[in-house]
Figure 1: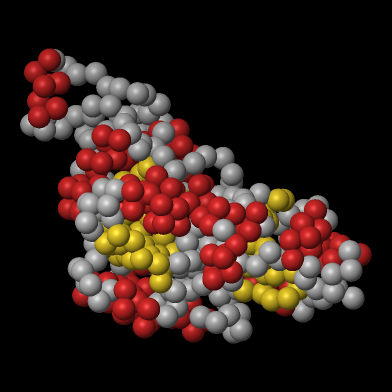
Figure 2: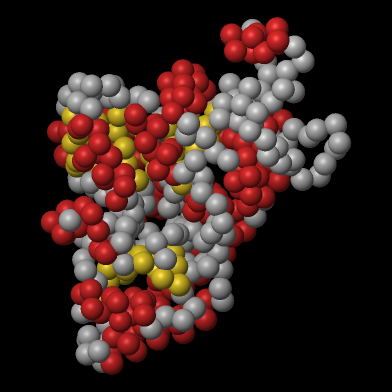
Length: 412
């Protein structure tokens, strides 16, 4: 039995394979039984041949699995495959996406350090920067992610970490990862990119200059609304020396069952993401011409404010669409309540289309003033487009438009 946690990515065997092939075959380590599908090691602990072996394992003189919080064969298989897909040296899987974000930051920073973040963040990420890190003596600064001068000013002083999302949640701002990374490195910062919206299929932040990539594997990687999980990817030495002691000792470990489910999901990831993206493009164009829709944001449309950046750093534009309806919150609620195919849910990246009202759900706690700065109006809706027939989706959205008209919200 070999513990691969210290170096969970060996990409040499798959270096010549393309993405779809890698997601079926990379990182497989079969047992002597020769199973086709990866084995599920649903165990909390492991036994030793002798007391001496146990002692040597704890000192690091013997390589052996100790405890599934420290390492597990199924979790290691997922880590190897994610690292291979991302083009990273190594990967640490975590219990949730927020576990990945929080561990990457908390393992790195110390009291007196400085963290700079794009203002356009998921609500819980915003809370960590605005509330949690300052409690531990960490200075935090928010900037407008699309303003180069703001980044320049914020990074004119030594900085420990930079956190950003691109595309951002929920309004799909696209940030120039390469330009921000160059400025951040000049300030001594580790650049952490939340790549959940783009997915590893469409964007490679490490190739653009970022140091660390984090995922909520709950989203496209599982993609079927079943399990929670997260991942931190980057250099092996940084993950092993900085992050791994933190995750092991604080208990931020992924369940082997969840890892096994995600291994199965990875096999179809490109197929699902490509199909969802095709649907999202159809939906975005339909919404742009629909009455009662005040505005549409989709990185693949030429009217997206950062469309040129998206074309440069993304190979596809993703499954998320943001739009605003007339009538503010009342209009948004009327629109959402009229839907029959698209489900109301704050999750995303699912095979099913899901819609949410960020101002009252995912971004409720950041407050109206901050939402206004981020362009999250009371009429804004975030739509995660799924695998349904595109015609059924546009027909369902037409029900929402009809509801706007019936409520007198400018859809005539």
